[in-house]
Amino acid sequence: MIASSALVLLPLLAQPSTFAAETTYESPIRAVLEGESRADVALWDLDRWREPLEALYARQSHAPLWFVDERLTPAGRTLVRQLQDVERRGLLVTDYDGPKLAELTAGLDFRPNATAAAIARLDVALSVNVARLASDLHQGRVDPEEVGYDLDVRRPAFDAVQVVTTLATAPDVIAALDALEPQFRHTRCSK
Image (cartoon, rainbow, N blue to C red):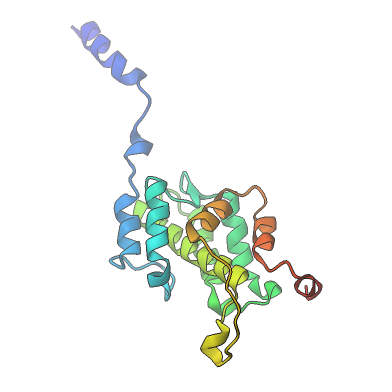
């Protein structure tokens, strides 16, 4: 009898574990994007990024972009460092949540088994900050018309989904960020 029970269970034991697949990030990611769950950082411009990030996460089957097995990816680690050092790129550190994201992601290293909700909050917060940084590097922070200049300056097209995806998968994140900046000689000389 025991032997026949073991034979029945053997095929179940031979199947790959579905535990990781059962961890779903869809609900917590949607909750953060819809403003129903507060991120651990202030997402003051979430309305601007909601639609492209919803499309991006849907394309990724709502898997985190910046975490694998509850650990920040190498691209994610690099971007958190870059968000702390945006002044080197002529931007204001107060416009980004780099220091807070660094504190929160470092906490994960000491707190294994973070909840899906915690990972989702951090992942969306990083995605919003990365989209903001990429847009500011690519298009500039200020539209000249908004500050009283009637200049006929076309802002370059910006595809947040494509840019955030590129940064999340880039083997060299710093080079990918550099490529977003204007490629004028005076911009390179100012660094």
